[in-house]
Amino acid sequence: MDYQVVIPAAGQGKRMNAGMNKQFIELDGKPIIIHTLSVFEQDDWCKGIILVINEQERAHFEKMLKQFQIKKVVALVSGGSERQHSVYNGLKAVQHTDTVLIHDGARPFITIAKIHQLVETAKEKGAAIVAVPVKDTMKRVIDHLVEQTVDRSSLWAVQTPQAFCVSLIREAHERANAEGFIGTDDASLVERMGKEVVVIEGDYTNIKLTTPDDLLFAKAILCSMKGGSYV
Ligand code: CTP
Ligand code: MG
Image 1 (cartoon, helix red, strand yellow):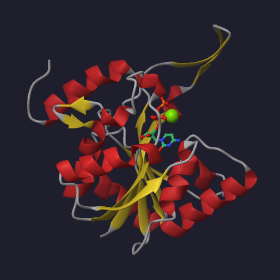
Image 2 (cartoon, protein in one colour; image 1 turned 135 degrees about the vertical axis):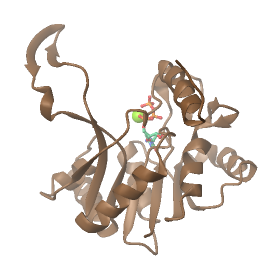
Image 3 (cartoon, rainbow, N blue to C red; image 1 turned 30 degrees about the vertical axis):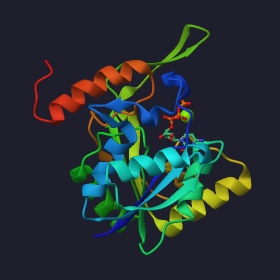
């Protein structure tokens, strides 16, 4: 089995409010993006990482890759104004494989076991994503008033990685660009083409580091992954 992965890391991390791109925040002495890259570095199925960055941060990324000996990055590509544009730029650099994963740089706790499940499914079905059933009661709220309690039984919170046949996801992005459509994830661009997207149950620990409180959870998850106890 083989795949390449596009990792968008060209955001500004505004909601993290750290005064820098959140990818550079250190956890356990390593920047978040290095934690993420290390998983793919260690996965034998991964035949290349396309890292999407902000051009102004290129030197910083290059320095980190050298320092932490990340060797599988085959291209450092410039990002765009929206995540979708960043991913599209990354997809153009994918080569020598029929399967691509797209994974947020800010999601460092993905496991190789879950990646393999996704890759196998995407090779068979064309598109596969990881998601977890929502745990809270969901209500539609407008102006602080409840509009509706939504049936939770069919609601899943979607994560990355998302895995696709390379030609399918390129076509989905090209169509979305041509039609001026911006989706909140890559699978939605495939869905709007009428194609099936398979959902694989993921792990609640595969969080995206978005706001400062996520760093508290991140420290606990890291500790538990290293075999420690955090309760
Ligand atoms: N991303 C990107 N290019 C953009 C926007 C986002 O490559 N124009 C990347 C981010 O670096 C991140 C991932 O997409 O790894 C998910 O985005 P998000 O969590 O929203 O990160 P940021 O956009 O950096 O954060 P914020 O929205 O709070 O500014
Ligand atoms: Mg963002």
